[in-house]
Length: 169
Ligand SMILES: [Cu+2]
Picture 1 (cartoon, rainbow, N blue to C red):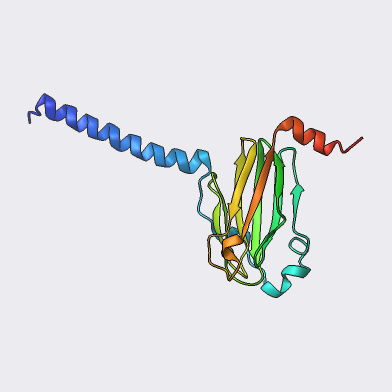
Picture 2 (cartoon, rainbow, N blue to C red):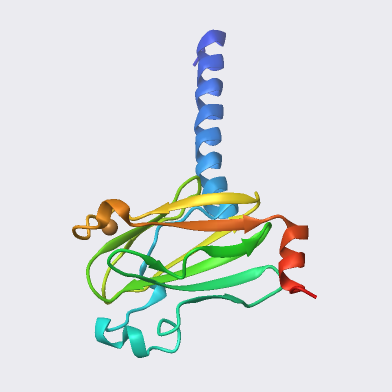
């Protein structure tokens, strides 16, 4: 069967596009770490949050050279801890839960955006490659003070962070 050369060109072009589209999806999934929030964080009874080893004392914890874990509780109408402070270039895993109502946790300018559901621990990892202040907001209506429920993530430049760790001696 004879295929006209223009038809061949269109076929090849369409194939190249399909391969390109599939590669972009594969790339984003495998390399950039864009992910859906799932149940990997586990569950916790809302009544146990304040006695829990992780959430009873909400905090930022350094777990590796450039790795941090944040144990966060969303309350009416603040986030604890706030602000979250980490150095530039760090990989931060947030574990967030709530002991009262549904909240949201979104870090503006990043891919961090999750519901915070009582009973559930949202686990989400993000790399902060650029120093600066990132706004945080609750995007689930959680009561009368919802509109004022906001927080901050401060990503410090390397030298500034080192100075902070050195204390004031
Ligand atoms: Cu809210």
